[in-house]
Length: 330
Ligand SMILES: O=P(O)(O)O[C@H]1O[C@H](CO)[C@@H](O)[C@H]1O
Image 1 (cartoon, rainbow, N blue to C red):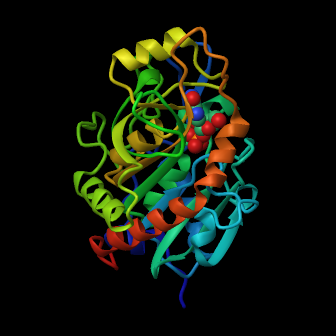
Image 2 (image 1 turned 30 degrees about the vertical axis):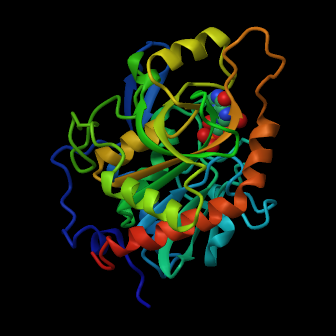
């Protein structure tokens, strides 16, 4: 099969260079003490073309595996449901960061789920690892350039809604971009219109049709008693939250708390990808001072392990259904 390249995929539009190319863009970040450097469209095209030269499928669906959901030590994990997988370690991919967190393997897996071509990130990048938000989200733009139309962003999160139990799944209905309130946004800096507009709307961030399908599929699999729908927020981490912080988040309508996803979703919506978000509730957010429990990453990974079967079945069925509403070829 002839190698695929980015221009074949992106609506067969011939590649037109920007009037003024934005190579490596450097700006001061909002807090003024950190350089904010974004990769140009051309740099990411190189990354996309590198990946396309190594694969023979054209994924239309991209999956980001949350903490503990994509590891191969996790036999039967979400990432393992991918058949005929071609794995490309992040360190082999030009311009890619590397994963540093336990439970995040650090590679892209290209293959099929229920016959639908997908690419999965077995390991995501977090702000607390020292990566600026634009770099955490770089793989989302690369996914876009290789032809991905729908992003499934999964994560592990603490349950703040008192009705949620450990092990529940939460379909993300909306998010609150807490870091954005302080001016930290993955789209901060010069905008390249080839990715998307300067001022993207965000009121339909999580696709309505996909959420509807996810609720139907939960019923079909008879897991609707553990599938919720709610609002997610991301804090910078790496520390878990104080009681006062959690109380405040609860007051403003947050149902689940994590340290990822929001910026990935903003980046995906900016370049017009459809988004489905799914949180696995791995721990209870403690909002009282006389509670013995303390949040910890081991528990987060354990619950990922405990729920891997259900997650795998659920996400596989979702991929199947989402791929039916996404045309095969560009
Ligand atoms: O959001 P993911 O990557 O699933 O992981 C969540 O779990 C880790 C904390 O245990 C944090 O990285 C938090 O963001």
